[in-house]
Length: 195
Image (tube, rainbow, N blue to C red; front, top):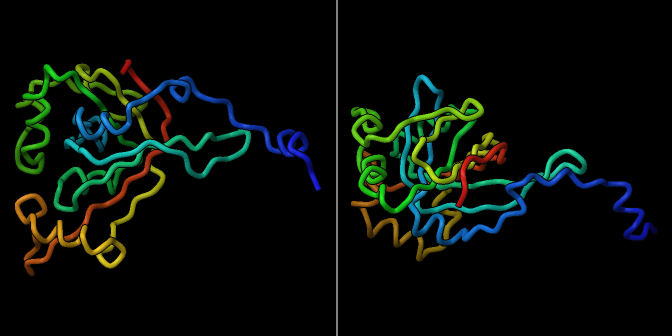
């Protein structure tokens, strides 16, 4: 049987990245600070506001990957969901409260039929091939590593009841049925700015 010292020498840890040593107020970041998810390419991208997200670790590779991730949850009728399903990278950005009006435009209009980025007055910029905004105070740049829809039968009854009771927030399809959010997990490959 190996002792702890032997295990540590057998499976070296991946080099910690600078962002991993910082302290984040995860619950406030997503719930209070209006995260903006942007997906697509520098030529064609879309953004939306999300309040559901998390930071964590999964699929670590000893000596190679720390497994640091951002997970966001996006409703299936959102155009950003469609764009993100076909994207390799995405960003999760946070903005100062003084820009709430501009950020609100990204969350209240569809990029499917409007140029909401231009209307918001925010300035897109590219980091590692992914799009964020000059005005963002902090951005996680992510390589998408997993995407999947949440199935109704896999969620608790009180959550199902919540979706069903809020058709204005969770639009129904042509059959009058709602669909739960999609999960998008991204490996953090870079960060920009300070929290």
